[in-house]
Length: 401
Image: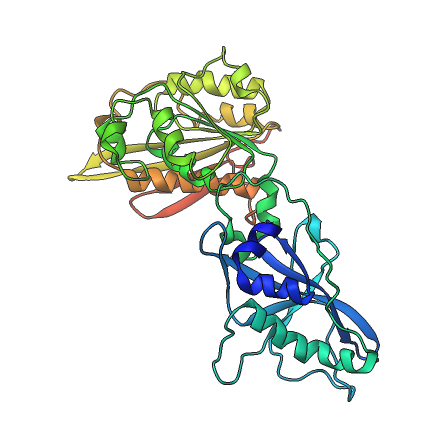
C-alpha cells in the first residue's frame, strides 16, 4: 500500500519527500515522530492520524479538516495548552501493526480564510506548525526524520479498500470476523440476502450451497440487478459471479446438503440455514449439530386473511452447547407444509431481506460486533403489529419439583 499511495498521490509524496515518517494503517494515514511539549515543557513525541477516503484503488483524499493525535495535551512556550485546537479526548483503535500509536484525542483547527485544507500536505503542515512549533523552537528538533514505516498488512478479502470501517471508526470490531468460515445453505430469497450482507463482512471464507437454477421469480426476492443471461444458470454460479469481483474467498457448490456432506463443512465456524422444506432442514440441522457447528436457521410463515398477508418471520440460533435443547422446543419446522403461502411465489423480497438482517445481526452479536443485552435463541417478528419477541432458554421451562 505504501508505495502505491505515495506514487499516485502528489500531496502524500510531498510529505514523504519533506521527511515526514509516513505510514498507513486500517485506511488511515499515520505520521509518526511529531515533537511537542507537555505540561512540564518537556519534549514528547507523538503522531498524527488522518482518515483516508479512497476515490479509487490508488487515489485518496482527506475526509475533513480534523486530525487525531497520539499524545497528551500539547503546550505552548508560556506553559499553557495550545489554544484553538477544538476536538477533545477520543479512542481510536488501530491494528496490531500500529500498536505503538495510541490515539488519545482529536484536533479541529480550520484555515481561517478558506475553511478547509487543500490536501493532506497543507493539513499536516498546518498542524505541525501549531503543535510542533514550540518544541521545534525550544528543543531544536523537527519531525523530518525521513523514516519509512511500512508495516506488512494482512491481505484483505476485499478487492477494494474497505473505507467504510475507517470512516465509522470500527476497524477493531470488523477484525473480529477475520478467522470465520461461513456456510450459507440455500440461496433463495433469504439466503441470497444473507450472502449479500456476509459478502460485505470481512469473514475469511464463504461457502454457498444450493442445487436449484436461477429463475425470474428469484430476481424479485434477491438483491442485485438481473442479467438476462443469468436465467436458468445454477444459483451458486450466478451469485458467485456477482460477488467475486468484490471479494475473495467465495466457494460455490451446487449440491443438496445432507448427512453425506461432512467434508463440505469441514472448518466451517458458523452456518446459516435458509431452506423452505422442513425435511431438508431436519437433515441439515442433524449434520450441523453432529459437527458442533453453531448456526442460525431462518424461516417465515404466511397466511392470507381478509385479502391481506399476515404471518411471522423466525430467526433461531443453535449454539454448540444448547442446540439439542433448542431443537426439543420444536420451534423449527422439520416437516413439510404443502399449504404454505411462501410456496406460491408471492414476491416478498422485503420480508426475505428483513429475515436475513435479523440472522446476520444475531451472528454479529455472537462475535461481539453488536451489543447483546439478552441471549435470545429465537426471535419472532409479527408482520401485523411490527413487534419482535425474543425467547431465551428459561422461557417455558417447567419446574421439576
